Length: 284
Image 1 (cartoon, rainbow, N blue to C red):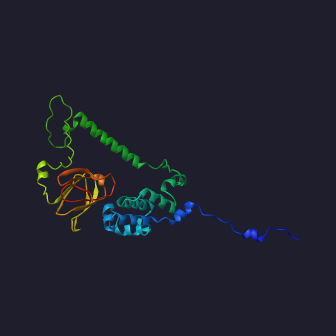
Image 2: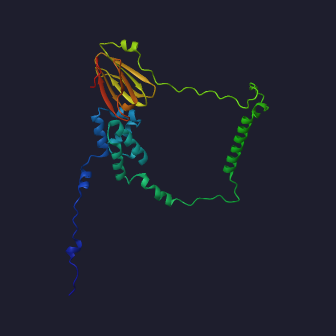
Image 3: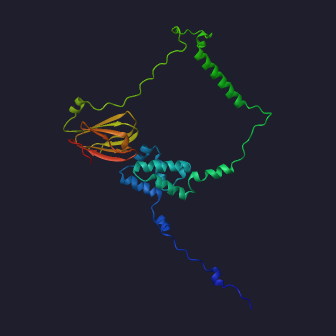
């Protein structure tokens, strides 16, 4: 009589109870769904997101459908996710963490392995001349010689055939021209300009203190402007009813509404929706 283990005990599978985190991860919306929902709630089209982020329209569509194959690799996929999330007001870093978890982790965790697996450093043979080092040494020698001649004033006596203005007696070097003044930001509207604003219309002047994407529409919904503006540039809009604005970076846009200085319209990277009407400025 042979005594052995019961077959039922050998083949019976062990029961596994899923954790709460696993259930939440399975029920959570996908990365593309999160970005698509945030874009719709922000009132933006795919074309507007593409203009604000410089991510091509087909790639924006593909990411919203969770197709990251058109991004050109994990590095670009992470950058596109962060840029689109910032434009639509979503948490880009949280979405990148989810992307890394689904695609084998972040590149930082792979770097030590890659360094360990890299081949040994190759040392050039003794009998082979190192032309790169010789060229660097020659360039350094030429630059040093030119600098020495300039400092000692010998450059004025070389036989190049060009005439130079004589230096004052006792001076060994030429004077350095002062640096050109940096570009000044646009000046705020003057009192005369404020007084000239029509009382029966709304007038909005936007001055860029950084780079931001801007969309402006009038009271009938007609698009007045849709593009990026950079530091130092400005745009002015006027309408009888209202001016509706969508800003991709509120912390980079200074606003003057109906002649009044409202300052910056938001924080750095903040997507801002605002509407102005005739009279006192008011957010819509």
